[in-house]
Amino acid sequence: MTEHTTELTTRDGETLSFRCGEDQDIVTAAEKADIYLNAQCHSGVCGACIARRDAGDFVLEGYSDDALGAADREQGHVLLCCTRPRGDMRLALPYERGLIRSEKMPVRNAGVVAKTYMTPDTVKFELQLEATEDGTLSLDFEPGQFVQLGIPDTDITRPYSLANAPSWDGTMELLIKLRPQGQFSTWLHDTAEPGSTLALEGPFGTFVLRDNGLRPRYFVAGGCGIASVISMLRRMAEWQEPHPVKLFFGLWNEDELFYREEIEALAADYPNLDYRICITEPGDRWDGCRGSAIDAFTQALAAETDEPDIYICGSPGLIDGIAEVADAHGIARDKLIYERFLASASATQAARCEIT
Image (cartoon, rainbow, N blue to C red; front, side, top):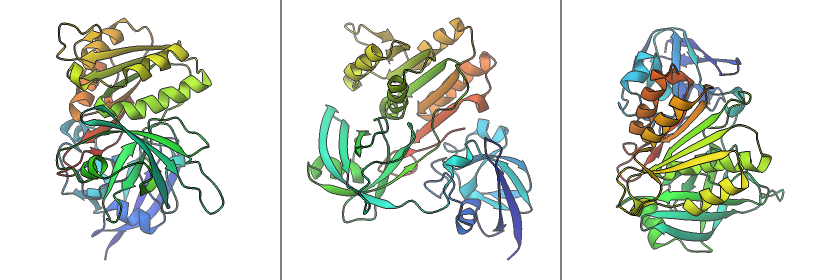
């Protein structure tokens, strides 16, 4: 088997190097070298392993256009789980060295504390981690990351973002959109109850806060994408970080509305937070922002005097819409920090995706 050297450079300038055969994808070869990159589906449909090719020939096969769109390809991006080298390669990762693991993530158990229906198909799911052998309760994660939850007595797992800020007591809050016929959704709706136990692996993901000084921070979220963003905002509120902050939370109609009281409470505790809950198709009684989150973001960016850091969590359409507005204001797509939710990674459950 012909092998080539693959060199990965992280966002903070660290370099990792390993050998990859022409019949191997880069994610698999990296794991054999004890380098665990940000990856999830391993089949080209979630987009988590996106990176920029800087040099080298390769074959890219078996990926979804939703996971690697035309704009990504124009910028030289590839999906590492679908990339097979045909020579030595250099690639740039969109995250720091500290988010790359050197060993497989351990699996832990968590107990169900509560499930609360915030709408007929949106559940707040609260869990309590069981202590490890050394008595550790906490989960060491960065706000914005996610965990994989396993359906009991199966090998089926699904990824969900943590909505709480990091804590030492092992409590976790997740926001889950129930999908018709979804395997985890069916278990959650029909079977899960306080006292149930399930497996948990994580944390994963590179959709995390970046330290760029005191630049304004804009957060745009659609639906349950608010979970990652709320985790970040809760941490910022705990530390009373001085950045000017704007949140744009988009939903189609009032029937989908959830988390309004939590956002209002967060804003009361964190005066730097200015938020808009945006309803695209509002009824006559809606008293908030009328129009999409993209519309509200466009108006705010036009009035902004400093270039903000822009965090986006939602559908590819939301990300593309925000990217177009940002580009019109001279902010390139590769300056955005985003995470995509894709339905194509599984016929029954939305998948998580990643970030440039």
